[in-house]
Structures are given as structure tokens and as C-alpha cells.
Length: 78
Figure 1 (cartoon, rainbow, N blue to C red):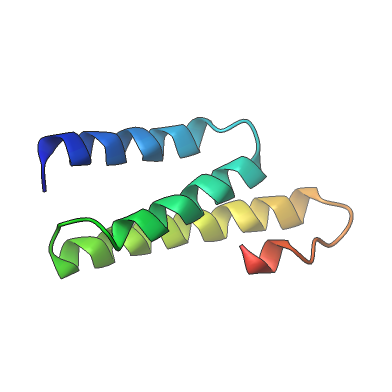
Figure 2 (figure 1 turned 120 degrees about the horizontal axis):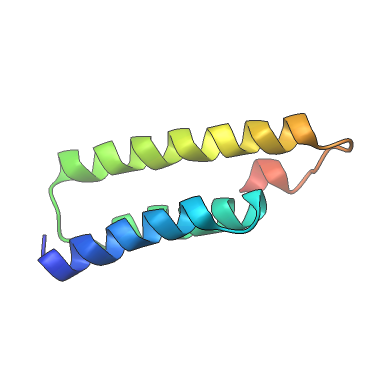
């Protein structure tokens, strides 16, 4: 992987962590997962990154469900 690509990816993950809302984090993570498919890295690296991001996404969804008084039908589509 090119150093610039890795740096941009690391910055994107950081941006997802600092996003102003949980929904913003989910949107950024969803975009990152889609970008991984286009990256020029090994299959095992892609798989590890995807697992990391999917786990992060699942935790954020649980936070939203826990903190929300009303169910969000859109949440399960993210």
C-alpha cells in the first residue's frame, strides 16, 4: 500500500472517531468499508480492516439503540 493511501486511511478512521454524532460515525465507517474494496492491499489486510470497522460499527449501533427512546428503522440499513 502506498504511504499516502495508508495515511489517508488512518486519518479517515480518526475522523470517524471524532465525528460529532453516532450517525456521522456510522456514515464515515460505511464509506471507509466501501473504499477498502478499491484499495491496493492484500486480501488478508482488507479482511482485518473490515472486521475492525464492522466491530466498531456494531458498537456504535448498540450505543444508539441504548440511548434512543424510539426505534430507528433506518439504523439496521446502515
